[in-house]
Length: 271
Ligand SMILES: [Zn+2]
Image 1 (cartoon, helix red, strand yellow):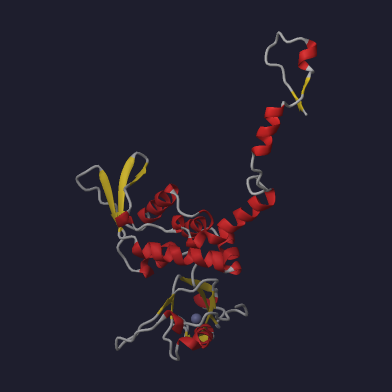
Image 2 (tube, rainbow, N blue to C red):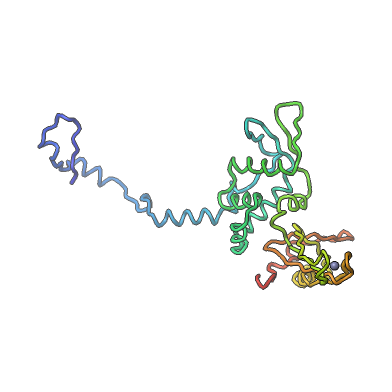
């Protein structure tokens, strides 16, 4: 049964409330239609699809951050920029974005801090790469690299560096470790707690990669030295943060695989 709505204002009262019975030809047409339960939008499925898309972000093409050498120029405030050699920046950004999706504690940490680079990585993890991603990358790199005005209207930013430069410049307020120093002599100028932030930590790996935890315990052990001001005892304590960027040196052309690294590591009583 179907109620017909009036098509013209001239229709009388009887017509506007009339009920149309479907004709036999209409019935035939309805019967011929193939009705599939998959065509209809089921709210529950829509909900699941959204969840799945988020989960699959890591393997979707749009999450890949294209190197500046492979992408077109970026326009900001009516100025055109070419950003080249973004390999170091991109590799750290990809690593942090993956960690954001993989580790719930790290996700909470990034959500809780205010750092433009970490926010950039979070946005890639949550939304994938968009046109705005390349604008944001340009704005971040502009803060740590000079802009070459060149002879054309297109400005050039060469972001060639190693990964440590990106970490030390863009993660200053979210360091890998914090060191506190205090002198035992209450009258000394060093008696006041002083803090030093280290975007990266330097490990000697005296043991091997499997004993990373042991190396980190050594790194955070209290250190005692002579105060250079009053010759009292200076105590130094290091605490580790939620992410660790480790610098180390190896000689004799030794090569290591990623599988040499432990998959988990217990730090500050959390793994
Ligand atoms: Zn002192």
